[in-house]
Structures are given as structure tokens and as C-alpha cells.
Length: 271
Image 1: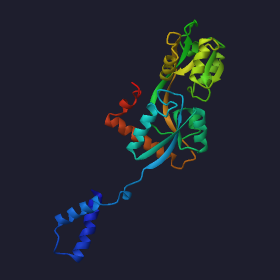
Image 2 (image 1 turned 45 degrees about the vertical axis):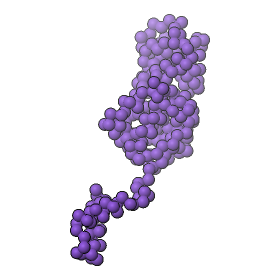
Image 3 (image 1 turned 135 degrees about the vertical axis):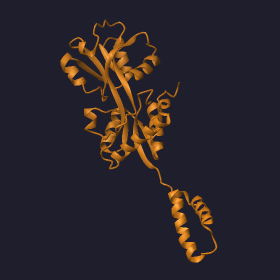
């Protein structure tokens, strides 16, 4: 409407000078609308184009095929604010390094905690919240009711490069835990099955996918929570638009919630 009003003023000036008695104001408005409708598409704002690194092994949020809840949610949120997203599917730790070096504009899915806030730019709106638990083999006798009651010297498996909450270092020190780092969820589950580790910290929804795929639902169980994580897109500090992009993503997520679409996008695509 602002454009049409401006067009009317411009046409008023032109026709008042050259055709003062020919056209009425109503006719001028009609001409302005026609003028606006025939503008070339290049006059419209071009979308901002960004490239994000996406993890290849965290279903149902992000898998090796470049699909999952996170992909779907991020695409829809950025579309709300005229940002066009391309993704590169890589291992999680590589995505973090690429973002830290500025090779890509950002990476998902990153927990916003002390260690990551020092390295990246974050918005205020998380993509979603997830729980991570201590998983045990059913053959293991577990008397602990919480992570702070784990037997001293317990051997705990984690994924190398993942974030497990700000309390993990304190927990390791207090319970004198021995940490075994591996590269995949399948490795963690296999180590549990053969009693090479006492427990493994895994994100619940992700663990459920792999436990079902491996057919070991009766053999592995979650006993108690490790932490709850808010999951974000982490933007590169090398990108001068990083703060702006984080604000745009916040806005896109807020709009999805206002429209009632957000919860629908949290449903796994294969359900």
C-alpha cells in the first residue's frame, strides 16, 4: 500500500503538469495499481542465502540423507523471514569445526552451554528441547537412582564431540568416572551389550531410533536422566551477519508458533 500511495503521488505530479484536466484521482489510483503489477520481479527483495552444516547421525532430527525434524523445522522457520538455506551433511564434529573456521554459516544441532557459547553465536529461541539419559544393559544391576549415585569409578560411554550439559565435568570429578569416547550411537549400544562400559549417555529420542533399528529393545534401558538440552543453530563468528541471522531464525520460529505450525513440524517425518 505504501508503494501504491507513492506511485499515486508520482503520477499526480506527472499528470498535473502535462494532463491537468484529463484524469481524475480515481483513474490515477487505477494507473498506479497497474504500474505496480507490471514491475519486474527483480524489484522484489532477494532472499538471503546461507549454508549450514547438518549432522549425519542424529535421527530423527538429522540423518545421513539430509532429512529429519531439524532440517524441516529450520527450512520452514527461515522461509518465514526470506532466508534460503542450503545444507552440507557431515559428521557433527566436522560441522562444528567448519562453522568455527567460517567455512559454513552455521551448524545444527548444538546445545547452548558454556563451552559452545564461547565458540559460536546463538539466538534466544531453541529449535526444541531434548532429554539425555543414562542407558544400561538389562544384564547390569543398577542400584543408583540418579547420576549422582553412580558407583565410584563407573565406566561411561559418550559420543566424541557431543555436549552433555554443564554438570558433566563436575559429575566426572565427583564420581571419579572413566569416560570412553566413541564416534557413533551404534558403538555405544554395542559396548553396552558386551559389557565393555557400565552405562552410556544418549539422547532419548535418538537412542530409541538406534535401539529399534538394532532390534535390542529388550536389552537396553534408560534408568535416569543426565540433563535436558535446548538445541540451537550455532552461527559462525566469522560471518558478520551471524547476529542478524540468529535474530531472523528467532523471528521465524516465533511466527511458526503463532501460526500453530511449530508443533506439527516436531513430528518425525516417517510417522
